[in-house]
Length: 448
Image (tube, rainbow, N blue to C red):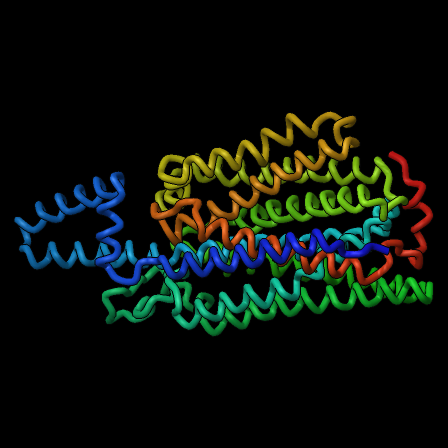
């Protein structure tokens, strides 16, 4: 039986407090008026040169069509920058909230796959997976609160929610987005988001409840019940994930689309979930509470880390190659800020960490059995996929105003602290040995 140590609990609480302060500072320091934006531009040399170029272009245009029109364009540009600056703390919150929630959800998917496949090797890891999935409930609450506030126009994260977008008489009317209004409308979007999160929590509750009941009764009917639930959940998640990725992420830039996008997002968060299982397992094993976990279990987790890193790379290259080859303007526009523009550094760095690094480090079978090696590789992979989520969300929300500062680090610290607290609190509530599972003996003696 694991006991949540006071030291780790303190670390998690400190992270949450520091993170909450960082989030608060992000909202407090966000620009409130266009005058604040002008002052910020004056103190930023690069942005200042961009502003001068914009004003020069506006001045030339003003000579042709009038000074009043030029001033209107300048004001519109400043308002756009204002919205991007105000979006920064919201985007930082969204990135962290989405990343940690999807880690927990994908661990639940991986857990369900083990049940559906009637796998024997992974039974000793079931309590760890169940503990990680405990984060789904608080993570869902926080993420849905963000969605609700977005629907109430508390931020400018989703441009299709802007006033007048669907009104042909408005100057903000967008015919392309209006064509998607049957799906992209705030009530329907919020209802679907609630359904996604509710179903994830419901399946987690039932699977966990049956797993614990199996320990005390050993009734194979409970085992078969979890088998059936797992099959249903895998199919349900496969359908939900297609729409969820469009609703939550792709709709940030509603003019762009990719049929591979949902699979790409799933691959990114799935490898992050498996990596988290490996890191938590190694931590608990070092604490001496997992004597039944051996190097073969660690090896297989590292093998999944490597395999799904390649899986992610396949979708990354497939999406990039097809859109680059087709050279369709509305699709190529997605890669312009990431590959050529201001997001080139995070885009290239996450590609190195998510593909090049796993290839070089985790290819060798012997390295997969060395715990500290797996931990080092896991930390790099998690960092790389966090940056991946960052570069998926930020270009459409904060534009060139992005940076890694207090709002971003504060959100990361808060959700990391909350994740650690919830996960290890849950792990401490039940025996780590799922003795009622009929494949437990096979798992204990497993050797690769």
